[in-house]
Length: 243
Length: 224
Image (cartoon, rainbow over all chains, first blue to last red; front, side, top):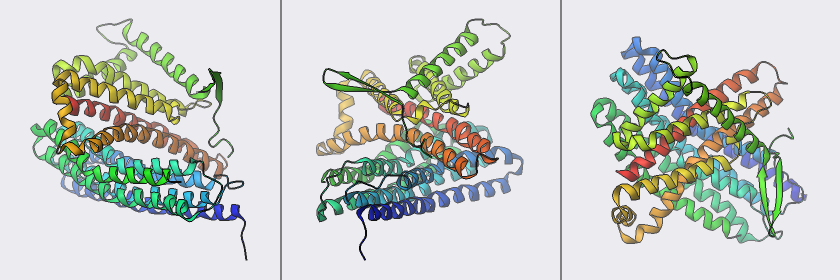
C-alpha cells in the first residue's frame, strides 16, 4: 500500500496538531490548578478577602493559560495548512513544529502558575499590597513564558519555511531535531523561571519594603535561568537553517 | 473559515524592491490614534477642579502609571518616562479592545505592531542605560561573568524583544482564532459574546499591562 505525498503531509500535520495542543495542555492545566489550590488555601485563612483573592486567581490563571493558547494556535494553523503541492520535507517540518510548541509549553505553563499561586497566598498575608503583588506576579509570569514563546517562534518558522523539493534524510531529521531541541530545551527554564518568580512574590509579601530590589533580583535571576532556553533557541535556529 | 490568515495588502514597487503595507492594521492603527486624540482632547482641554467623567478616567490613568513608574525608576526619572509608559498602555489597551466592536480588527493581531513597539522599548531601555550609567559601566554588563559570554548576553538581550512582542501577538491572534473557530462551530449562537468578553476585554487588558510593565522593568534593569 502506498500513499501520495500530500497524504503524508496531512498525516504529519494532524499528528503535529495533536502533539501541540495535547502536550501544551499538560503544563497550562497543572499551573492553573496550582494557582487555584493556593487561592483556596488563602481563602480558608482569610474568608473576608475572598473577592480580592478570587480576582488575583483569575488573572493569574488567564496568564498561565497563554502557553495553552499558543499550543492551540499552532494546532489550528497545522490543521488548516495546505498540503497539496508541497515537498515531503514539509511533513517533517510540521511534526517538528508540533513538538516544538507542545513540549516548550509544558514548562512555561507550570512555571507561570507558581507566581500566581504565591500571589494568592501573599494577598492573604498582606491585603494592603494587593496591587503591587499583582504587578510583580504579572511580570514574573510574563517572563516565565519566554521559553514557550521561543517554542512558538520556532514552530512558526518551521511552518512557513520554504523547503527544497527533494527528499533527503539529513534535512528531514534536522527539521524534526530543531523542534525537539527547542521543545525539550524549554521545559526546564520555564519551571525554573516560575520558581524564581514564585519565591520573589512570596518574599515581597513577607517583607514589603524589599519590593523594588526583589523585582530587580528576580529579573536578573530569570535572565540567567533562561539562558539554557536561549542555547536551545540558537541550536534550533541553526538546525532549521541547515535545510 | 477562509478568513483565517487572509491579509489585505498593498504592494508598492520601489527601486526594484517591493514595499508591503498591511492595510487593515494601518487603518485600524489610525482609528485608534484618532480615538486617543479625541479622548485626550476631552479629558484635558476643559479641565475643572470638579472633574467630569472623561477627566476622571484620564486622571486615573495618569496617576496610576505615574506611581508605578516612580516605584520602578525613582522620582526624577519618572518625570521623563511616565508619559511614555502611560501612552504605551492606553494605546495597547485601545488596540486590544477595538476588536470587540463589529467590523473592527485588533492592529496588535499583526506581528509588525508588537514587534515595532518591542524594538522601540529595546532602544529606549538601552539609551536610558547609557545615559544613566555611562558607556563604560553599561558595556561592562555584557562581559559578565566572563568575556567570552558576550555573544550569548547579546543574544539574550535580543531574545527579550522577541519574547515581549511575540507574547502580545500570540495572545491576541490566538484569541481571535479561537473566537473565529468556536463561532463557526456553534453556528454563531450564544457563546461568541462571552468569548469576546474573555479574550477581547480580559486577556487584552492583561496583555497590554504585561507589555507595558515589561517595557518599564527592562528600562529599570538597564538604569540600575
